[in-house]
Length: 203
Image (cartoon, rainbow, N blue to C red; front, side):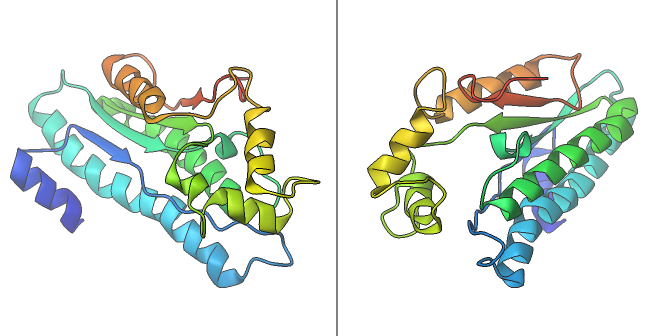
């Protein structure tokens, strides 16, 4: 609540809220601890609920003074919110839940012209989340045995690149364009927009 109020006092309100906090703890059922599972859930799922709760409160107030205006809540979700992820169930579960929240918030907030959508990026294979030599997902997935037969992190990288019809990982510019579209349009809410190079397609 304090974060939202501070932003509103500084900028005069909240027109757009983008929920971009997220963490990953990979591992199978025999490996992941309850505390790790709950950490992922708290950051990826519960925090989204709390932020949407307080951001929408201010947006509703603004709507009462300017009912013709539109407002946006956008969750940065994941392709793992669209299909399960082997030995990454804590993350995938939290992201599936995030889409459920997005759709539910969209129904509740539509009368106030508050659009609620999610962007579901593919793997940021070139970014530090994947490439960090100690904690990156390439290392985590190699250790967890997510890629059968992989001997090196390069093997893991090539495996994930091969899954993308357009042949590369997601980039920041791809996500930024999706966010810009969701904000600009005025006739979509409750959507989970894939940005995956064709790896995940709307059904």
